[in-house]
Length: 300
Picture (tube, rainbow, N blue to C red):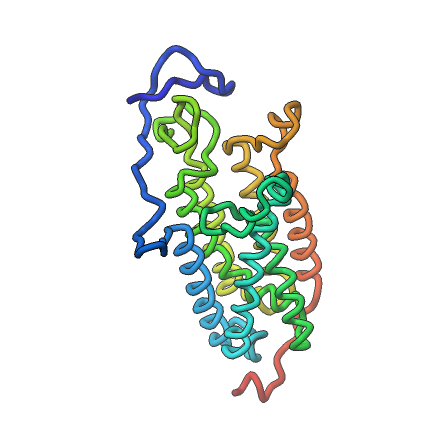
């Protein structure tokens, strides 16, 4: 079945038809053993955390990236930090989703707050949770929070990529109506027959793949891990810019006031501070002189 056409630049339906891509009949549950259901959404988080953990360890072992000195975190510290980060991702992501998008859940269905396996996680909430976890970890280990964030930031796009793919498999967070030939029709829960932007795939490519490449260039070519806060700031600014641009093709948040829905989304409101803070961190980090490694450490 072809989706109804959307008039270009306006988003209003017309009587014509356009080619579209049918949403695949994905089962969000990979397999189930009795009451235990293994979901793609949960596996995406597991894959992102495990691969990000290993990537952070690889960064710690590359002495060239740190200017001949020891990395901010060694392998043992990264092993400890991964538990803090995991708690921050899950706790912050779920609480952020509830507070930012569905606060009514708190008094209407409070037990649903704990049903993280059904989906419903906020990146911005997860970011706040991870930031708190890193701050507590840095304080407990007497480390510079900016340098801890620099070490963690390059691995985050890995989890973002898998998370957005899981959003697509779940058929959630679909985009606005479109007349583009790759518009997808048949997303679960969509009440109309219009083809929509596969915004989850856009975000996987930009916030996941492209942002990973940008940070890889920053760490391995520009050697910005030697500049305090720059890599973390580049992540914040890059994600904020990509998210702001993609919010124009995502379906507006239902809880936004009607007269704001055509101009602002909750994702925009939460991403603007990220962009500004990221730009400030890059600016201040590039201003600071790079402290050379001690000769004996560089020789070692």
